[in-house]
Length: 404
Ligand SMILES: Cc1cc2nc3c(=O)[nH]c(=O)nc-3n(C[C@H](O)[C@H](O)[C@H](O)COP(=O)(O)OP(=O)(O)OC[C@H]3O[C@@H](n4cnc5c(N)ncnc54)[C@H](O)[C@@H]3O)c2cc1C
Image (cartoon, rainbow, N blue to C red; front, side, top):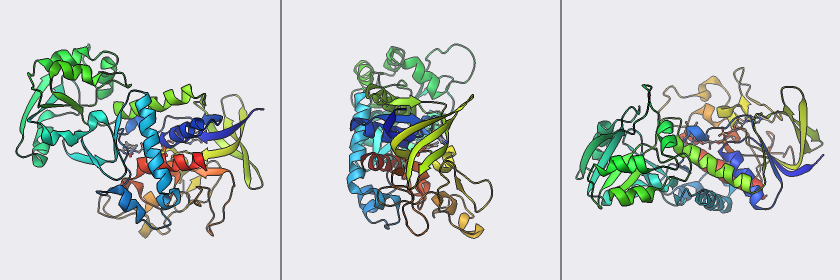
């Protein structure tokens, strides 16, 4: 049986990144996953930390934090690597870890993120003369007047105008951003035709829901040349074309770098010899199959995608290797009464603790397996939602695991 250099378990953001980085270093890589992970639900932006300068805030975190194990070098390299992968799929990203870029949300507030698709980079809005916010006929969950009301709080002196365009969808059902993005993939002309009627000027901006295709082959510049104004996308409720585009950019990279990608492959257990994981077992409809590798990267998504489950209180389980899972003991530490109060939630800190090479450790800090590395939402010890570090931890831990 062929032994891969690396097996990645899980095809979410962390798994795709780990597999891409390993493949870029000429390693033979196999990805085993049974679901597509959170990317098609996510905004497509990569949040590193909720601070004006995430890089500085991350440097001051305690040594128990996953970022302290990952280290500044992998953090920086991971941001560059993701931008490269996206650029190769004609999906330019802006940003760096030392600053935050504003993005207009689906309700018209500004969200700040370190890495954002170029089409969502709202930092230029401040310099625009007039901002048009444009609804699509039949598209739900995008209300131009609400967006304008909220944007006015950030840009009180600016001129705003709302408009509605018709992309002529057939049938009577509600349209999602995904439908509109699919319609415009490889064909931006219907959008350009409608926007021309706004008579926007070269100093103006047009804000739309995220409908600029589902792959990086929608020509934003072709539309801008025709309508004169610069066009921008907001985030949206799931499913999200922007998250999907990033997922497809990674899939394209994996394909062109010879990575073997097995979907519908649920890993059920590891094959262990002493302190080494020599393979993993995949359950499929008729039989089990063992895959072997020198290094295993566990990117199964923690609570969000079933990598860690808790069927009884105070007993969270890692589902493949039965690794020890850190969690705040005692119901009183498990959650705050107010879900959205300004403190981390205990349950959100649940996950696996590791050494500086992201190998799982026991309660005494002893490394359990020499060649198993844990990444992404599986990592414990911090509330990634409260900190807004989910994407940043996913890509930087993946980069580190693939390069140690
Ligand atoms: C609605 C939503 C919005 C988000 N918005 C943002 C945002 O704005 N900014 C940001 O930075 N991040 C955001 N995120 C987070 C981000 O997209 C990723 O969820 C996060 O980075 C974690 O990635 P992951 O790869 O660790 O886990 P996941 O994306 O959850 O992927 C885990 C993968 O492992 C697979 N898996 C699990 N168990 C097994 C098994 N036994 N065998 C094989 N495969 C298995 C799953 O099917 C899945 O493919 C958002 C997430 C969600 C859900």
